Length: 432
Image (cartoon, rainbow, N blue to C red; front, side, top):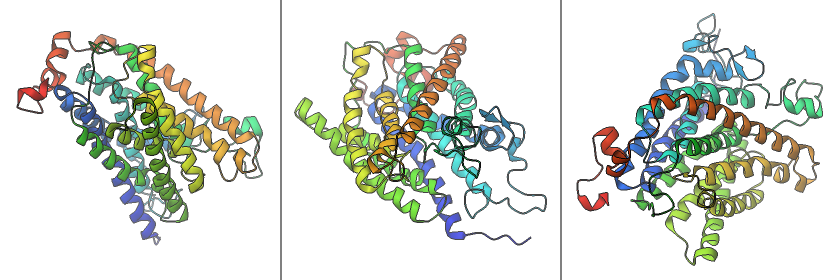
């Protein structure tokens, strides 16, 4: 058997996988800069810990649970079918298995998808800054990615309940076509439900279960290093081109559209956030610009291949405004979402997923479509939200015997010292 590979597509997908992997160290800078000086190392280690745990788990059972062929009730695939990637790399003749998504070997898809699992889980850590035991975080990482992320990836992208498959919810609502797929298929181009709603809801649940930092609502928790925050945002933006344009699964026009839409929406979101700050506070901030960029990136993720560049401007601008307003809700409702995972990822993830029903160039209401795409988008968003909320709560309470919180004394000294026996800076002033 002679293997035929589109080397251009293969190269692009390998580069995209590398770009998405870079996002997690970028997130470490973003979150590390937003935390206080006595907690920056722990914050960065939470991202690196997610890379370590999931990098192993994904090879063992993550790929099989997400994209295996043995569908279990439309919720997950058999984790033992391709355990350790057995049968996922080579065929019986010893040739590389071909991807079902592009003209390259399937092993490249595996490389690409593991990076999504890593960054999604790492995003959650921002809600837990400065107060949790590192060992409990690592245990949560392994359990959560297994019970929540892999099933949701299967449901949306692996032919499960939230996909356009014949047995999916969308097909049950509006029927199937002659090809056996949903007449109105859900659109989640690169992870509005799987990544951002998923991580945002999990962050909210953990913030409620773990509780507030000492002094929350009574003292200011200011970012200790805003250049770190902006560097992290820049690395995230750069890596996001692999995230979104890579989800075209080839070096093609769809990838180009996703690239342009990603840039356009992100730029508009920065302007939307800064305008909101200007009206509300009188000044636009560097933290606002960095956070606005992330909000725009989040919102365009599910929609990158479905919108026009002009539609992406509207999507991004509204995302920047919504998230700028939403980050203050934690003070009103009393949950300590330390680094605004809920306000940015959940809010903009919901907006980006649902907005496809309005702004999608083929099926959106504003482009001559009917109500059906909007209904489908709302349904998949709500189901993903409830699925994640329930299972995350179960996991969070199940881990309580391990202990989530460090002691009040350790929290006062700093989680870096108590959990890692290190400090980021050697001069005392930085620890204040």
